[in-house]
View 1 (cartoon, rainbow, N blue to C red):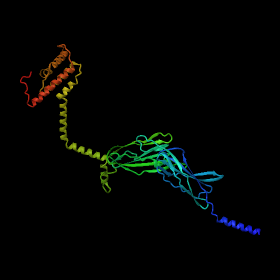
View 2: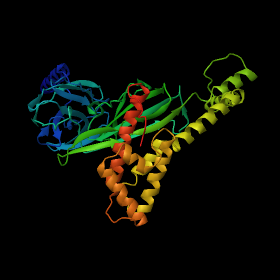
View 3: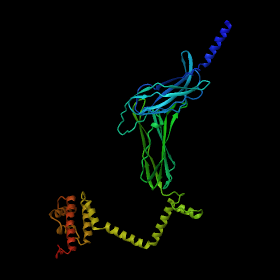
View 4: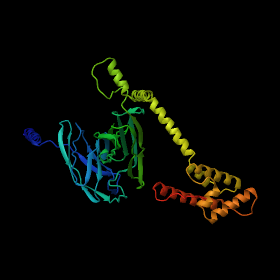
Length: 442
């Protein structure tokens, strides 16, 4: 009887155990900020999510990307890390994923709770566990003058590539400028776009940017990279300068503003390239090659030289007459009364009586060819005043020793200039028929 009762109880216990649902696999989710502490507006930090279980994951856990107003939040592409911990004397293992968070506003920023789903155990049971909310402390950032957006990183490197590298550019060719910005500690989406300035004479065609997050050799997030490129099509011949490109950024280690820059690009463009004729001609043969050659810089130069040589040969007689006329005009100008008086003016600081007397006498003889007095004495008598007469008498006496007196080159030249001015005025009046010449000039 006792044996039968024991069997009955055993059967009832087995049925009750069979009716109980199996225990769900356990999973624990932990969230923390790296590095810990306050952030600055625009500074990037990491939010690490550790997912642990005493069993095993059958596939990668699914993590959403929650939307937070005023915060750039993205799941990093870095390789998930392996996590092992001891909880209540048991070994728990799992994976670690990282979010990149960049607050764009200051104050207390709340990262809300979100659900993490994973499949655990031999039955691949789906388990969903919510994360704990996380609060970020963000300090405001004061931008310096001239800076509209902040790039915060531990280091920034900017490089450029210009293609083609040779200097044989012609009208119609294009030059491509490629600028890459690499920032350590900042995601690619936070890197500022490059502004390619328009240049007169060049057509500007910008290409869409290429951005990517840089992952290190150990699988961790390093920074971001952004590549901007633009092509300039040469429309006119000339020298061109593409201005330098600068990026101002804040060092996240010292919180000081720094500048990274690439230099300006200078190049010269000629007329159409020898391999590209200015006038398209279909087909092959001699004519396309001839047109291609004569539309190049060398061909255009040869055409100009040939036209110039033909013009010189055809109009050589007329050119010879023009050349002789020019030579005669140049001779008259060099030996004119004005040129002789200009030479006299240059003697206003002369100290040699002989030199000043010779130059003044040469001017008087040259002016006589135009109807003026033929000697300086006659100039003094007809157009001079008492001061001019005294200066010339003193110079003549100092040269020949007839009289004793002091002379001044400046006073003599100024007196002759005034006399010449009166003579020129009288000559203009005579040509107009206003003043008759004296009957008995003395």
